[in-house]
Length: 296
Image (cartoon, rainbow, N blue to C red):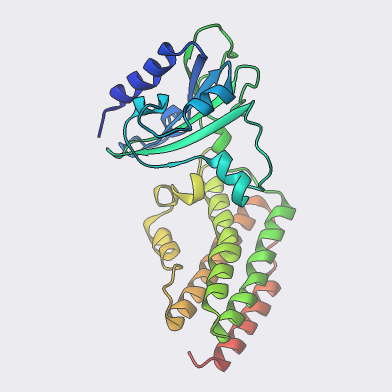
């Protein structure tokens, strides 16, 4: 795997060699001073260019010979703007290739470069996310403040947000129970690991926020949960994951209920919210009813 210095030399070398590329910035974890550093971090790079469409066209042929070849030999490449327009991964619709285009490149030495090109007339505001200017030939980029992960910090919930999270968590468990009872594993797993877990993850984040005075990031998709949760609490969180065996699934359901209760009561106490115990009691009664009727 090439070193960071080698990759940065390539990123800047490509930009310096092409007059159409006028500025370069870096976003993501490598621009975030609080993110753990390791060799698996992506390089999230933005080129600001005079002709997005032309550069995209120059990269559309076979990889050898494309200007992207300077980054190395790919194992796989994704063009998210093209994919979105075809299969609607983020709503679909026609992408404006005059303004921007992107390639996500996983290279044969394990390096990943996520490269976006933007028109110099369409500055991509990082909205407070960490960003570092690497090159600016014409002074086209605004002056950026020192990179910080403040934009990622857990946000303090309102009372309504807390109440809605609790209600959604307990309500969606009825669909999990019915899915198990009907032997509809894909449906039950989706409801459990999407609808229910999303609410658990919100509560975990708010717990981390309370414990850090809302000055910490839980990471994308909870990747820093282990960093911030006490070992015993993280062990309970890990036990909420289940395999396909229904008995194991039921055990995970009861584990997630207990964990959510403890976290929600704690968050409510710290933030002055009311925890609606009756909602929990009602759903727990329903879960017991369905489980008694199940053959597993």
